[in-house]
Image 1: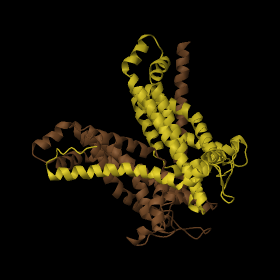
Image 2: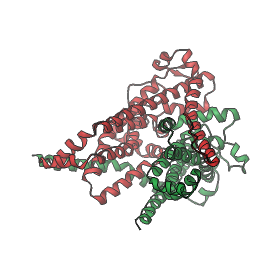
Image 3: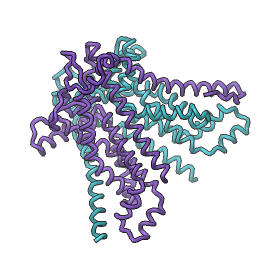
Length: 281
Length: 292
């Protein structure tokens, strides 16, 4: 009797697990088939056509995402690494406790609230939407991710390495920068790439910060002061539109976005396994 | 906190200072977010918080702002999501941790990670063109956008969250407990029930709470399938709105300062909900550590 229940439950659990993966399979299938048919050279290079007219593309959105994520990384990665460094290298108990709570809290704030915050702090004083604001919003989302990842990686480094550096006469900051950070470039890069992948898919924080645009960004640095399109925002706009042509482009955009994100994740995996292979040698 | 001036080297002093400043900056960032929201929402506080939270009329034109439809929408979509997601995620976690062979385990874990990395707009896109037509056909309803559709979509979105957390909790159960159960003659399912699940109950509950919190904060995918109607309705198959989706929809076009303040009030409510969920989950995770 028990073995019957056992076999039944094992099968039941396996079946439910397969069912859990069903949405993934369906999404991949739809994005691949629908998205592929909407891709052409035009898609990558042209701007949206006037409303209702067929044709046009999302070139500006792809470029916009690259610019926004670049801006966000410029602020978010150093800040995040700095906080992670502080947590792993320095021993101020109280500040470290506050910092850990801060990272936890910030990572659980819904991203649209962060968009609201940046709207009040950046968009309202500037009196217009801008890529700056979008980049800042994305950076705020990146900081806890990078900080947490950095701390976890550096915590695993044996102390003897730090002590060896100090014993050689290096000041602490050099030990941290040249030895601790430099020596963990692989895992740290994977943390950074994961944060970048996650942030490139964010839509909500961009809605009231960089908003959207139908044009190529103007030449920097003026272009950064204007609203800027981003791939997820463009996908959203097209997906809820009533035009089949735009809807098709939304699928194509989703394909590009997913390829980007998956590529970043795969590179991350490669970095980790490479490092492990090197270590075992 | 006191800076320990052990660092005699000027480079060290400067470096330590810079790091600490950045950390303090992070702390002030969080405080600033809370303060900013509270400030923007202050008109709501003066005209009555209780009324704001319990009134079900949201009419920006008439300037009446009651948040109940959105509280209801958020709760219902998330509860629906949990009802569907919990059995699926638990099964996935159990399968990965106890039943799968190493090859299958690696493959399935990879798939779960891919699922976790899908941006929420893509879920929303799929929701609009695949899930909703399916729901319309299966449940024979005219209008597909509804609280039910949003709940169903959310269920799939939080599967990776709950299953990966629960999987890690299962992995932490010591081998000896499993072996003890098996030594007493338990079948594998009995071992899973008694040794693995039973001993990690609070951790499992913590991951449920985190999944619930994630569902409540989700914005884009929900906005795309929920219909964005600001009227409270008890019929789950009717369009609705959540706290997050109404902000996404109305903030860019809100004109009057009362409207903006009301939306900021909703943001504050959302933030409070997210923080409470997060803290609650922490409590349950800590409980687990102490027990083992």
